[in-house]
Amino acid sequence: MTPEPVLAARLVADLVALMQLEPLGGDRFLAQSEDIGTPAVFGGQVLGQSLMAASLTVGAERPVHSMHAYFLLPGEHAPIEYSVDRVRDGRSFTTRHVVARQQDRIIFEMSASFQTVDEGVEHQFPMPAVEGPEGLTSELDQRIALGDRLPEPWRSKAIQPHGIEYRRVDPEDLLRPEVRPTENQSAIWMRAIAPLPDDLTVHRALLAYASDHGLLRAAMLPHGLSFMSGQVRPASLDHAMWFHRDFRFDDWLLYVVDSPSAGGARGLCRGSLYTRDGRLVASAAQEGMLRIRKPGSPRTPITG
Image (cartoon, rainbow, N blue to C red; front, top):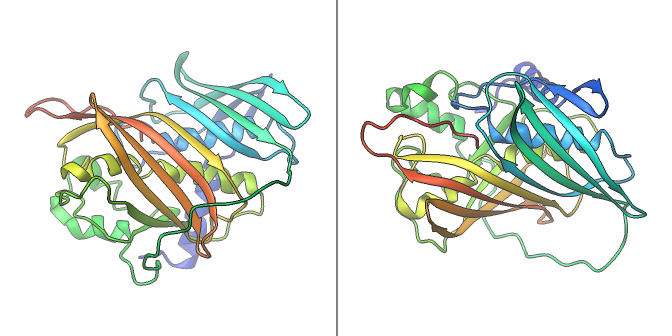
């Protein structure tokens, strides 16, 4: 279910505003937070905002090509201060390091690399042949259909319309997914539900935001686990992204994810992002904590 155009435009404008940072001087920036129903601030929000902070200290002629981040502490649904260290400005590459703080607590850090536009050899893995987004059920509709089965922590926020729409190619039961073979990939279409500004930095920041959605789930499906059911205590530990080609996030992108390994209460997940015409525009990787919850144990914050 996609909201009607006026509401869709407002939701996307809110999301773009979330990526707009207030300069504090000295390469320090202040950002607001949203509450999407997770106990802690959504990790994707911090990924997108940290990328915006780093980009504000780099010229537009050097777009970001990679970022590597660590989630250090659960963040609160409160303003976040980002400080940027100008590590290096070379002939072709620029490096920035970003630290996110709340009340003098360092909750996150990220390094990003930017490069002048250049030419060279090109190749990519082909996009898997999957069903297109038309006719697929949105994840929002899946959550609404759960009704009272949806746990209370999710019931109020998780069924509200959002500026990004997700449609799973082979949707699983959000509370009791079937066990899937480890080698199986899963795929989800995603896009902003209304036109975005032409600033490609905004598109990259919002893709970083969305890349944290559902990635860790790839490590749960081989075991039939769901974070919505309360069976598992998940938390994003780190997150990396590589931006290969330009794209627009207000058109559909296919996110193909898998999990090659899990062990030691951690799961490793990978993702590839394709445009509808099959161009590989970005890659992502994340390791997350996955602890099976014992009956009666308290819930822990989810950062991603």
